[in-house]
Amino acid sequence: MAMTRIPFQSQMDPEVLSTAMALPDNSSGIQAEEPPFPEIVELNVGGQVYITRYSTLTSVPDSLLGEMFSRKTTKGLARDTKGRFFVDRDGFLFRYILDYMRDQQLVLPDHFPERGRLQREAEYFNLPELVKQLAPRISKQNSLGDEGCQSDPEEPSPSNDAARNLATLGAAAAACASLVPGSAGDGKRSGFITIGYRGSYTLGRDSQTDAKFRRVARIMVCGKTSLAKEVFGETLNESRDPDRPPERYTSRYYLKFTFLEQAFDKLADAGFHMVACNSTGTCAFAHEQTDDKIWTSYTEYVFYRE
Image (cartoon, rainbow, N blue to C red; front, side):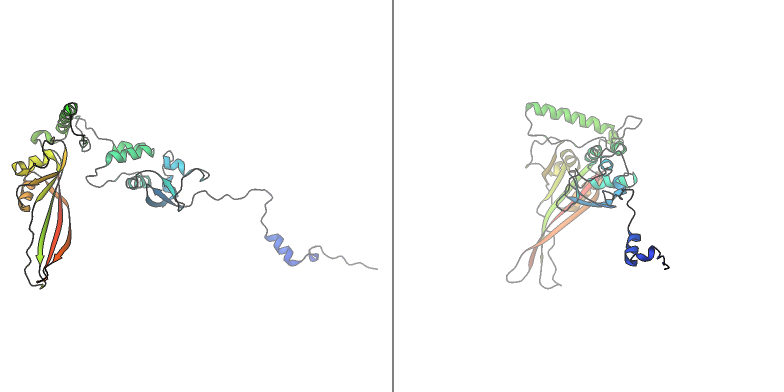
């Protein structure tokens, strides 16, 4: 009796055969590992949220951020309630840290007032090149650059010992000012002066009715005492803030006149230029018989001298 040989592959179910061919080869026992950090990283720095690329955070390998995000695991990194990586530092200044890590260049706005604090942040994040760029510059003539003189600190009410310390600080500040280019000849120092005033005006119901504009009761002066006295001289009323040392700041002076144009002329003559202004207005009340509305406003003008 003759026997017929059946091929081996015909004895298997076609579906089983296709499933077996589709299974991956795990004979080596190695599985592909997913990266611990996503390509787009969300940060919470002091309450401010930043979104950036993973490559930006690791662009400076030796920095604090470079070490944090070069780990093989995210364990040990603080997170907020929404899963964002949390860094307990100044959220406002971090924008400049992040900008620097994008292209290793420092770009700051004009008259940036917080170079010292930003330098401290750069030290914390271990960015030595940025620290060098933020350090005060000293020229070959031993003259300090724009960042050489720091603002004078506020001190408690002076006692006898404190008064001597204030005198020492005043002498040091004067020596520092003499090193700034352009200040030795005319004795003028750079700084800000803010002029503020409250005004009111009446506006009738009829749009063609003439409004009674700007009744200025008092013009306030904010800034360093020495600058205010230099600009306004005898027209400066110091009765509310007596015995204030010349190197201290004040917001309690006001002018003996009420003409804004006169204040602007004095500031212009002293070399100051307006750099900012803002104003707010509210309707205080309306007259019962005429429906005229009384509006009050508060306006500030900021002047700066280099």
